[in-house]
Image (cartoon, rainbow, N blue to C red; front, side, top):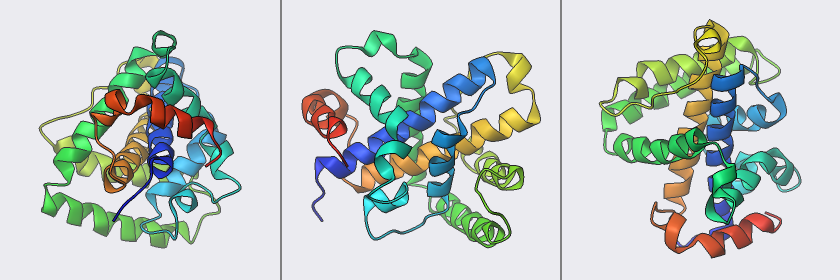
Length: 209
């Protein structure tokens, strides 16, 4: 199935948004909920009619991923130095970790089972930002991906990272980053595209999704 770069740009924006939110959480202990919620929602969306529907739909996707669009454009454009190096490292690490995950059928099955449980739990809450759901997504990441040989090391201020709530938020956002990395791959995205298709991807990041 052929996919266009516009769809890949959506997945890429989500990937960099998750990475930037993790970096900010680790350094400052703060979380922009407006940008975090659509990412956490995406974890619980197993299938959707269109790529934009995974991140809020045609009319909301653009705003929901505004942070990630800006960061992605900077990374692949002429403002890479303006981006936190940790954000870039997390994004590339998520792509690498997802490539390992796709080869592990037992772990994919375990994640699928946990997603089913979280989908049922979501019926009892108004938002994916509820602390119980964030803890559930965090637990899914901790029990699966964090046990793989390759692990993403999050660096920041220990005063924040040692707080249980912050730790849950970080792991939940990493899970959302894996969701975006998986979508990126499914849409035909490859790591080398970040170098050799930069101009084309930036063009689509600048346009309306």
